[in-house]
Image 1 (cartoon, one colour):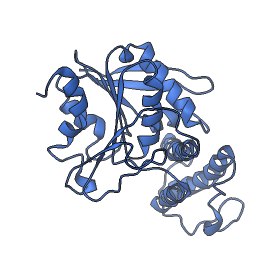
Image 2 (cartoon, helix red, strand yellow; image 1 turned 120 degrees about the horizontal axis):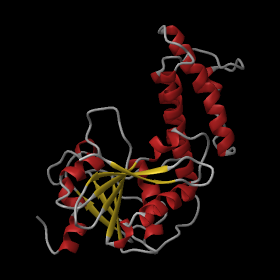
Image 3 (cartoon, rainbow, N blue to C red; image 1 turned 60 degrees about the vertical axis):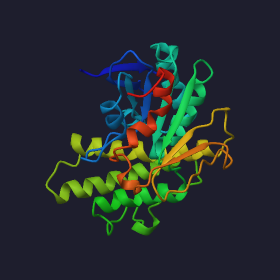
Image 4 (cartoon, one colour; image 1 turned 135 degrees about the vertical axis):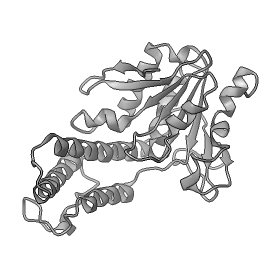
Length: 286
């Protein structure tokens, strides 16, 4: 079936998109993850293929933010996505919100907001929690991908000095990263015979900045107290350490599959492990 998109514009930013992947008469599942240009399995697609009558919806904040310009607090993003879910009736039934990898913080905030108006369960799949080190690593990885490590910034600063102070204003951090990455992208484009002001270069810069901005907003949200009573279920691979910065160990359920983390989404038991709560609400599994 064609995907439907549910839009909720928030003040000062472009519409936030909740994309319907599958239809069904059972309780809905909202998946927060990221579209990837690779053949690797994606959480939303895996669950959609095994949904057994549960409608599956995907939220991809990085794609939404790539059409925007600037930093947006994670609380505001959660509020916008929650409004989209409520306004389209997704909160009228028992609802599962599940997040993958570094989407964990947004999925938890979204679930906590929806829990005020609906019966909500939360599942985090292999969660990671952005911090200064991971944001710096992502910034460096983007630069390395462009193969411009020996280039100078427009202001003449050497590559080693290109990383902004990550304790500065997030708006300033993103603006400084924008200058560095724009310069790198233009150098890469010219080296490959591409137009440095072309659409492909602009789209890639927007995607880079959206990812980095989302990481900054997730890091900043984790510095504030946990706003709700909701306790998620963690689904982990064989060796991952269970950890939620907001919550004490032992205050949430941990489910472990004995497979390597990189093979978790492809494991035959994975989808059933995620969908346990929703199928129990139906009165049994398929």
